[in-house]
Image 1 (cartoon, one colour):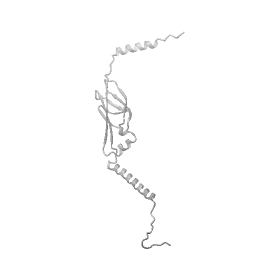
Image 2 (cartoon, helix red, strand yellow; image 1 turned 60 degrees about the horizontal axis):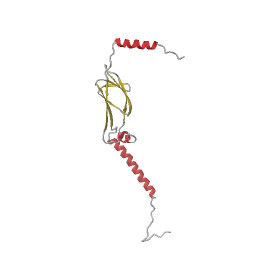
Image 3 (cartoon, one colour; image 1 turned 90 degrees about the horizontal axis):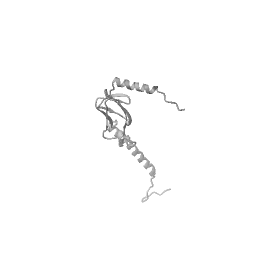
Image 4 (tube, helix red, strand yellow; image 1 turned 90 degrees about the vertical axis):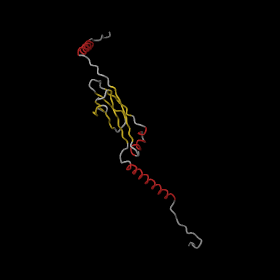
Length: 166
């Protein structure tokens, strides 16, 4: 039997410190998750990253094909989602057609893992504006007589058989 009397203290069992720290850890984790979701909703539940490239030509008014699809006449602005190499073709009557494999480089804040934060949790809207200008060369027009002369020359070259080595 135990003697509990005046001046003696009763021992009360307390949960181990380990259980307390787990509870605190869970509460902190829940708070962080809620904070992340709150940030997402406070920023409008949408991506705060706006990417746009503007394609210009000298002279202006060229038809622009991006990856083979018409997007408009220069100067033209195009929204895009991904960085990388893009095929850009410019066509204008009286000028040589230009096809370029344009590298669209990502800025530092769009590198992994920073892109996740800048795309989803930025408190401000980020605008990435890219500008590409292409120069079109005048198309050299050849007269019919010049074209026929070149054709005859090529025909005669193709009919001459090279000498066979003996």
